[in-house]
Image (cartoon, helix red, strand yellow):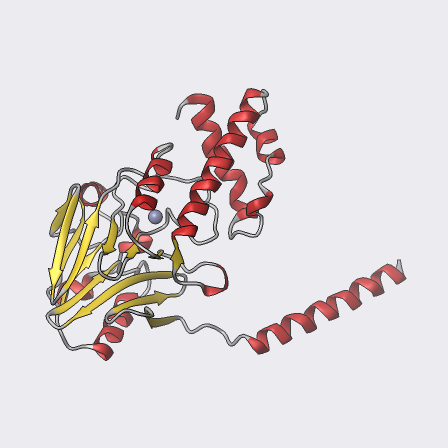
Length: 296
Ligand SMILES: [Zn+2]
């Protein structure tokens, strides 16, 4: 017992040593930061803790997106960072979709006179639930809207239901960049039990986005190792993940497996390094279980 205890203690010491040397090499991340997107004149990412949004600076004004300010002063920092780059007015704030962790906290932008835009289903949800600290959109998008400002064109495109029924794909055609949030994560499984997600629409939406003309994707959260920008391969990988998950769950149901057995036995080793694989895979399985078992 003493011997085992000592070994465990020694391993703990080694683990501590490794952890502290890793920390010494990687300084803690500041709570927020702005990154200019390479090979663009005017496209930026504002990150606050684990959320991020895109903004575009033109001579005639700024197009901002999600304020990412749920219960935190992110919009104040966001505006201060924009002001370090330009004094041009902030003309627009565009919501990616209706979820509060991305769209709350926009009042400081409203106070500066920005016009808020969202998909029409996002506005309907906001008016229904009246969340505190979410600015109601001034304008809505149905299928598509194009914003032109100071030489920049930004398309706001609705490809149908996916991670919500109000998701926009914002596409910069000249830069071949899209900004869309939560449903095309970088090397991550879907969030928890995929609440508010429509199956199989999400897979159809992924096919539509993959068929569009773009090279880089800015998602709503950085991926592993802080990666802030993805490629079309990330979208293809997410579609493959959902298809593999769907097929595995359908097979388990065909074999008469229970929820518990399906969640315990289904493994998708291709994706085991992805963020959320451990905690969220069983919940992702449950979402597809309900779809195949009950048509929910
Ligand atoms: Zn969301």
